[in-house]
Length: 171
Image 1 (tube, rainbow, N blue to C red):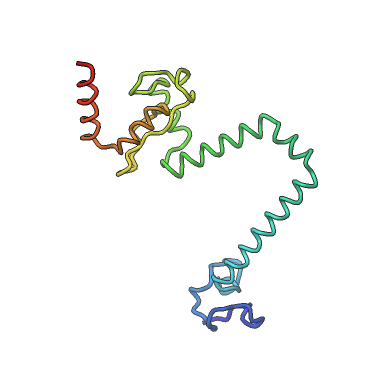
Image 2: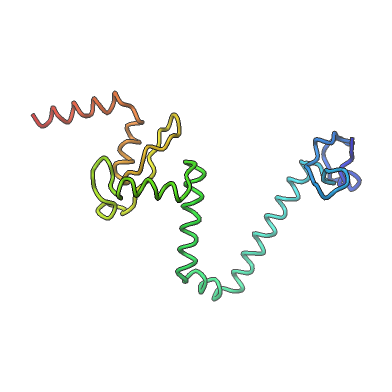
């Protein structure tokens, strides 16, 4: 059992003393726990984020030429794009950039449904196609084909009915 250090200041809203597991781990402290309970730590971190955000906004406002100069550099745009792509691939699909590149090379940059090369596609890029039930990556598709499959909700019966419907219109 332990008291939150904000308890003495009247800022801690928890009932004190509290169980040790209500304090975050901190290897630097002798007891291995932080001095603030978890609910107080959340408040502190939220305040820090607000402060950092305000500081960044203030700095950008005071140094607009430095911001513009940095944003104009090709490296800034390229790095931001690569970081975003890497983050999305990892979070949404569990893929690394290298795995995405392997799939791309295996398909030779061609959408397996419409057989158009990436350069001929509307958005000139290929998107990750995955099973919405299992999350397993199936391959890379052009934007149009990926959206089409998504609109059919990966439903084989619905796709078969669509094929029958299309064939009926051409006979």
